[in-house]
Length: 393
Image 1 (cartoon, rainbow, N blue to C red):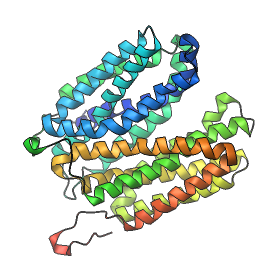
Image 2 (tube, rainbow, N blue to C red; image 1 turned 180 degrees about the horizontal axis):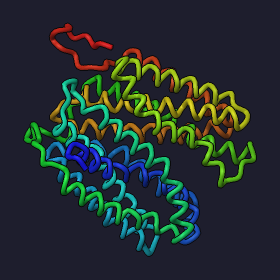
Image 3 (cartoon, rainbow, N blue to C red; image 1 turned 120 degrees about the vertical axis):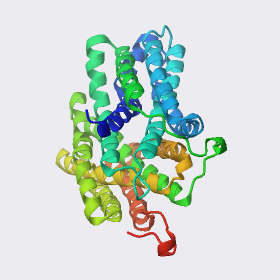
């Protein structure tokens, strides 16, 4: 592999653990409950606890990377993934399993902010962000690992039982750690002595994270509501219900290079607004859907929206973050994903029982309308002295 491709590949390997493990657990909950007999309410903490740590830990991990060096934090995260994989696979009781799962969440939350901090330092761009192809690669890995989590989990459980979904992290972490030790440079930590646990968050960065949280409200409502609707209303078998969200996940991967191409030719503002408009359109189609066909159409539109929106917002983090706090900024951005996921799950618990798929769709439309307004107003580049502080298109 060429040198310029090794660094993004090593970071991509490390970042796949968080979305993979956040989605893979879904197919294991019923099996864990059957073994430990703790009840559904308790066993769901394997997922909810991971989400909670996903909100709290990334900013802390990013700040630690800014303070002590992102390569160290990145590698420690991978070691934690390997160790907790063994602990969880050998857990003799549910409390031990839950403790290992929460530690696993901390490890998985370390790699994204630390890895992107290394990329920002080693591959700086003129516009305040890493090369678009690198951001696109990381975005595709995040989307692909989240989408394949339930599929991989189902295969592992059918072959070796639920403990295999934790044990699989061990060889993956070893491969990622070897790649990290060989290919990740020791980058200089700007302002390490001044770094604190309270990073400097600009208004532009906070707005970007808010956009990402609202975007994820829409996407996670779709991910949760469509399989529920398919099984409870449309009569789709359980083993096929999850396939209805494949257009969303698949196009979210395939269309990411198109987002890079569009940004290069039409500007980041165009990508941001187009993604938000498609998000609103797909949400409205889903709200009105009453059969499988429109649901698949909505999923396809939402998949393209995911590709455009995630690439644009990932890019804007580096535009609005202070270079001394890149890790912390990426951590806050990563946490906003789980803020959106947690909000979506809470909304769905109320809306789906009362209004079914339509209720979830209109909630998505409301969030998407705010995202579209934000896409028009959000600054897409750093203010400069030459333009008098204005943010161009």
